[in-house]
Image (cartoon, rainbow, N blue to C red; front, side, top):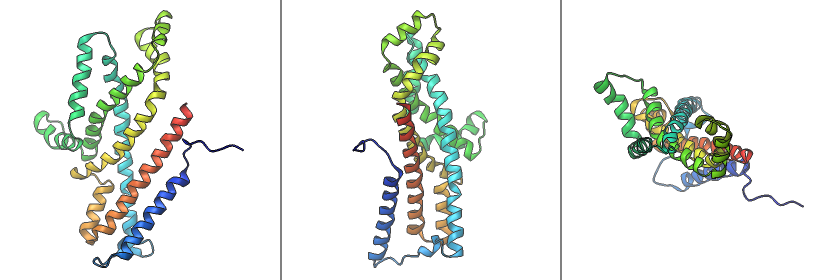
Length: 257
C-alpha cells in the first residue's frame, strides 16, 4: 500500500483553504454587531449584485494581461542581463551588477509613476496606463530574474561547461544547448514565486487608472459605499488567482524534475 508523498500538490487542499476563508468571513459577519453588513451589493442572487460581481471579475483580464506580459518581457530581459554577469570580462560583470542593484532597489509603484508621468516630460515618450504598468513591472522584475538565471547557471556542475567547450561550441551555443536546459530545473521554484509576486504587484497599476481588479474594486466602493464587502471579494479574487497559479507552478516544477 503506497503512501502519499509530502510534496504532492492537489487542488482540493487549495479549495479547502477557500472554503475555510469563506466560512471565516461568514462567521465574522454574523458575530459583528457594530457593522450593518450589506452583502447584497456582491450577491449573485440579486440582479445588481450579479452585475457588480461581473464588473469586479472582468478586472482579472487586465490583471492577468499585465502579469503575463510583464513576466514574459522580464524573462527575456533578465536572461540578457544575466549573461554579462557570467562573463569573465570585468566591465560586463560591472554592468550586470549595476543594473541589478539599481532596478532591484526602486519600488514598483515609483517606477510606474515615473514611467507614466515622468518619462513624457524627460524624453517625450508617452505610454498608455496599461503599457506603463507592463514596462515598469518588467524593468523591476528583470533585475530579480537576472539573479535567478545567474544562480541557476552557476548551480550547473563545472564539468558541463568544460565538456561543452571541448565540443567546440560557441558561448551562446553552450548556454542554449547544454547549460540552460539543465539550469532551468534550478530556476523553476524561484521563477514561480516571482510570477506570484508579480501577480500581486499588478494591483499597483490601479494608481494610473488601469482597470484591473483593485481599480474596479475602488470604483465600485465609491459608488456603493460598501468597502468591507467589496474588498472582501477582492481578497478572494486575488486568493483564487494566486492559489491556482501556485498549484500550476508546482505541477510544472514536478514535471520538469
